Length: 112
Length: 114
Image (cartoon, rainbow over all chains, first blue to last red; front, top):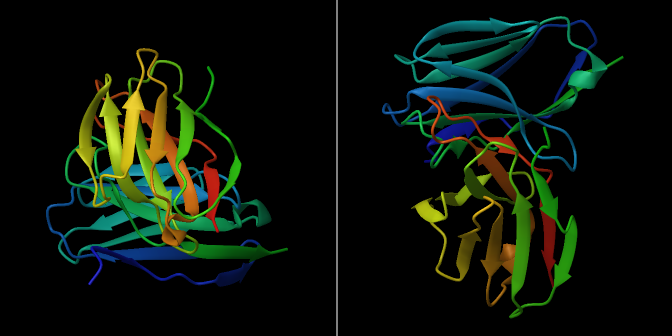
């Protein structure tokens, strides 16, 4: 079993829809949770960084962490074609960025 | 402020050869991490360098080695290339002296081993 599981998709939604992306994990020691966006032929770009359970909002993006269920989510409101990319969840035990564990990524397509 | 730059962008090698990939870290960052991303997979941690010393290593064999220079740029060396080494190699820089260290990635080097 992988430490971090993520549905690879692809996920296709119409422009303006609310998108929900999810990851589950098995290591209860994870404390820091991240979401990265990766466009084709580019490196991952940090979108959200959260610590502990709860919600964090940044513009159209909301990150949610449920440590009791070992489940994290990223919600995208008012989705745009420019949001089409692969979304990677990532997590680590310490605030140090050593050995961040990534999910396999979900490919998202927003239809105009 | 300059971002993370990697060179070359693409590389084709044959099995058994050796390769060196290069990374310039973002201005003000003292730490470089290297990741391997196979097609359709998430990045996998290879190792990290902090102030020229190795600061953690993932599950990769010793033929994967690295260096960090006084200006905090870095190299990843892979010896005796195997077909399975074909992947996107990502470099990320960060400032380990800050709380909640965050990684900033370059665009990667696409390595093909034939």
